[in-house]
Each structure stands twice: as C-alpha cells, then as structure tokens.
Image (cartoon, rainbow, N blue to C red; front, side, top):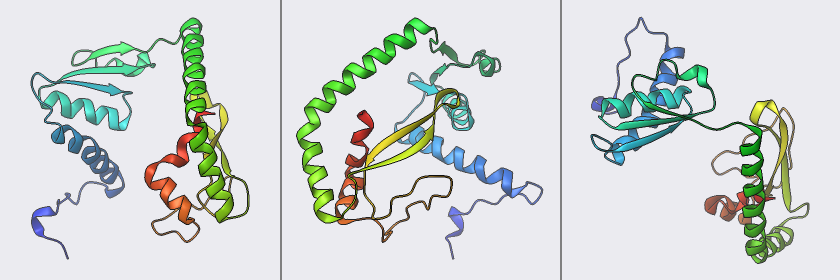
Length: 193
C-alpha cells in the first residue's frame, strides 16, 4: 500500500523493462541536481555521456545550467555539441604517463601517512577472525584490462570469481570489524596499493 501522490503511472504501451532503467537514471540524476539548486548561472560537470551522463546533461540544461561534458570518446559527443561545452580528456601517452606518475606519488604518500591506521585495522581483523587481512578480487578496467583490487576483508567468507554472492543488508558473513569498516569506507583504503 502506497500513498497515491508518490505513484508514477506508466502508460501500458511502454515496455516496463525499458521504462525501469530510465526512471532509475532519471531519479539518480534529478535528485542531486535539485538538492544543490542547480539552475541558471550554475555550472555542472558531467563525466561521460552514458545513461546517467545523458540524463544529467538533459536535466542540467533544462534547469538552465552551463554544462561541461568530460569525455574520452569524441564519437559520443556529436549530438551534445550544440548544447554543452565538451572537454576531451587527454589520452596521449605523455599525459597518461604523467597522470600515472602523479597517481603513484600521491598513493605512496597516502600509504606512508596511513600506515599506522593500516596496522590497527589489520590487527583488529586478525583478532576477530582467522584468515588473510586483505580481500582481493579481479575487476575489469580501462580498455578491458583485468586488474586486482585490494580491500580490507570485512566478511568471513572469501570469494572471487564469476559466481560471487553480493553482500546484503545485515549479511551474516560480515564481521563486527567489517561492519565498522564498511560504514566508514575504511575497507577501501588498500586500493591505494
């Protein structure tokens, strides 16, 4: 049972499987734009012109904001050019190497500064449950390259591979320390490695 004023009626002619994602993307982009009072005289930066990016551009322009689109794909911007300012993210080798160098230096500094925090978290994980301190998982990145991410282990069960059971709210596999790490996002810190 819901309050009727919160119900959106979707015409029967529309395919629900096509309408659902559009509504989700719309709500995901509309809410923050409204929350931050985006309108005339405001600037909005959109990274990528995918589903959410496309909706963000449409809403921000409709609200009267100046939109800057950041992309590495010049082909996807053809339809956006009359409406938004497009800034192509540089992709030449020199700039990519410079970006990588800056990433490595900043990560190294952050790792040194956070080393005491890492030690405390690692000790807490080992005291609560046996097993490794870090959780490793394969991910797919830029240009389809596979890489491994590292996180502090927050669950009793270690899984990796194609058949992962995604954590749910109140998942019994999450440890007490793991719950604290997840709420604070400290479990993400090892991604600096």
